[in-house]
Each structure stands twice: as C-alpha cells, then as structure tokens.
Image (cartoon, rainbow, N blue to C red; front, top):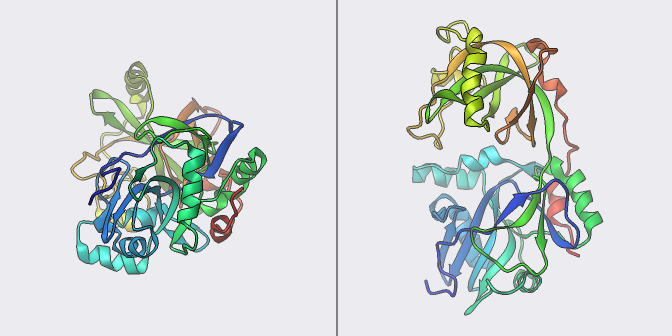
Length: 356
C-alpha cells in the first residue's frame, strides 16, 4: 500500500456542546464503529478509532469497498448494522469475535454497512489540509453512483434542518448531531468538531457497586429498573465521581451492604446461563477480557436520578451520569415505564436524504 495518507490514522473527534452551533456543516451522529478506510487497488485496510485494524471482522465490507470506492483513497466514516428500520449496536459488537468461522457466519447473518462522511486522500493527493467544504465536494463527487451497503452521509448547512434531524431521527438509532466548521482542516485525534447528544433523566435503583481500580473506593454504581414482571434488571452504571466523593460513597452506602449476593435480585450473576434470561451485572463479554467484573451487592432500597442519552434495547447505551439522590421515590416505582421512547423513524429515509 502506497497512499499519501498511510495507516494507521486516528480519526478527528468532537467535543460535547449543549446546543447546535450556527454557521457550520451538520451531519447525523451515527451509532456504530468509527472507521478510517484505506484502499489502494485490491488492498483494503479498515482502521478503528484507536488505529487498530478491524479488517478481519468485516470481510463483506472489504468486498464492497473494493467494488465501489475509488481505486486509491482514504475515507472516514462509520460502520453500522441496520436491523429493521434502525441501527443495532448490540449486533455490531457481536462482530468482534476471535473465531474466523463465527465472523464469516455473522457477515452473512448480520452484514454491515459503511456510512462515509469525510475524505482524507484521493489518488496521489492528501486532503488533510483542504478545508471541509472542499473535502465534502470531493467526497460527493467520489461517491456518485454508490449503493447500499455503502452510503454517503447526508449533510446540510441549514441550522433549521439540523435541529429537525436532532428531534426526529433518534428513532432510527441515530445518536445526535455533529457540527463541523466549514473551514475545518482534518486533524487526526484532535477534538475540533462539535457534538450535540440527547440527554434524558431516569430514577433508578442502586443495587451494588464496583470498586475503583485505585483502591477501596466506589468505582461505579450498578443501576437497575424493574420490568413488567417485577424483576430488577441491570441497566448500566454511573461512574464519573471525584475521588473524594468515591470515598464518601463507601461510607454512605455501608448500611446497605450485603455479606454476599445470596438473596439479591442479581444473585445468579456468576452463572453464565442466567444471563440468557435476565440482565445481570458481570455478564460475559469479549470486551472485558480478564477484567475483574466482581461487584459488592447492596440491598436495593435506594434510588437516584441519572442522566442518560438513549437506550440500547433494555439498557443504557452509555455510562449514565449521577444527578442526585431521590429519597422521595420507592425502588418499586423505578420501572421501564418512566423512560421516554423516541418516535420510530425509518433509517432508509435518513440515508436517502439529499444534501444541502
């Protein structure tokens, strides 16, 4: 491979802001795996956000990229899996598997798509020092005639349209809006773009915690919601606490500590088969590797309010943010019924949007 921008390349990143800023180019924030594609003839390298190769996990995409991308190019975008009328991040994570046979099976069962939104190089020319407007024009020209599962991300400079996208398209699995300055040069691993994500709040049961890697202080609180059958399901964690607060939480939660998980709603967490019928902490994951997933059980009697962006199935998609304790709420009142459901929207219509 001999390209003007060689792998590995870490993608340019975005920092969170509260509102969509004016005067920029706007795109949907896709909920998938960020990827930089290098193609030089038959050679294709799919690089992850950290620069590590993802190529072996998406053989069906390699074929598509050889068929449809320009012969020599470097493209920034997102690998996604479309399930029904929305994106499915859980199915996407299943694709990272050490066994080739499993990868091949999933490539047929849940094929991936690639949504392109930036162009870093074309032919012998690096576009890293080309302003965004020029890179976008080159990307649109290079993607004339592409077809699924390769997509050109819709983009607009109309703030009103961006605000409409933010409100409407979450139901298709999109994660917010990205705003990019029109004169922005491409700078790998630099947070020069802006992202606006959805945030909601929920009252959840605190049913345990994990210790922090630095010592005997709280690392993360384990959160639960009751389902329609009255079972407490593990829905995620909140973890961003100052160190002083982590130590205070140990003392604060001490009266709720249980000697063991026996009798706890998540007492079967160490039994791998139990995870097939319930959401429990410490579930087996290819991401966790040798990580210690043990936790300290608490009597599920205390409620807190957390902020979250959106749900992935029956769990928080990302780490929730602690807001406050809710002594006025009973644990039994913390059910899935309180969660706001985004309006469903057909992903195919999002991908078919014109630019402008």
